[in-house]
Length: 340
Image (cartoon, rainbow, N blue to C red):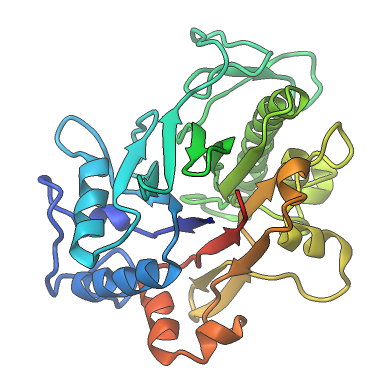
C-alpha cells in the first residue's frame, strides 16, 4: 500500500463554487503559474504517485457555498485517479481543509475524532481537536488557551487485506511572522507563533501517546511547519514541535527517517518545500512534511520517499515530472510504501 501526504498550495483557487475545475488562463495562487497549468501539473503528479490514499493539506474549502470533497472528487475524475473518493473532518475558516483522497477498493477510512469537546475555557487532558487546550507554555502559572485553526483529521482505517490502523492528518501552525512590521514586531510575532505551534504539538503528542499506549497502529502525516534546527527561536524552547510529536524522550516513539536524519546527521537534511524569499527571489528549502509511524508499522519495513524535483533521481531524470512538481505546489509529496 502507498500512502502520501501532499500540501497543495492554493488548491482552493482552482475550483469554482460548484466544485468545477477552473481550467483557464487566470493566475493561480502560485507566482507566475496559470490555473490551467497548475491543474495539469497536479494531475500529472497525482497520477505519478498512484497512491492508495493521499492526505491533502490545504485541500479545497468547504463551507455553506463550497464542498471541498466534491471538488477533490471532480479533480480525481478529471485525471482518472484510483484515489477518487474524498473525506473531510472538522471544517475550518481558512479556505485550507485537511482531506483524505483515497481508493475505496484499497482502504476504508472513517472520521473518528477522539477526546471530549470543551467550551471556551478548554481542558488540559487532550480534548477533541476542534476544542480548546489549556497549557502553561511560559511557566508563569497561568494557562494559555490554544486551538487549531485547522483541526487534525483523525481517521480509523481498514485496508482491503483487513489491517486496521489509525491516521492523523496534520497542518500545524505556521511560524512565519506574516503581517509584522519592524524588527521588534517580527521577533514578537515569530515567538508567539512558535509558542502556539509547540502547544499544538504537545496536544497532538498527548493524543499520539494515548493511541500508542492502547496498542493502536498509527500513522501521523502532514505539514508541521517545523523541523529540527529550522530556526533560531527553537533554542528558546529547547526542541522543535516535530521532536515533541515523535516523542523519542517520552514514552513510545514514532519514526520518520527524514526527521531522524535531520536530528542525527552532520550533513544537510532532506527538504520537502521550496519558497521564494523577497526581495530577490532567492529560494529557501525546508523539511516541513512528514510521515511518522508507530513501532509496529515500522516493523513492516516501509519505504519512504520525498518526491523532490532535484534531489530525487527518479524525479529529476523525468523532465515532465520534474517540471510538474515545480508548477504544482511549493511543497513536494512524501510517500510511504508499506505492506499492510
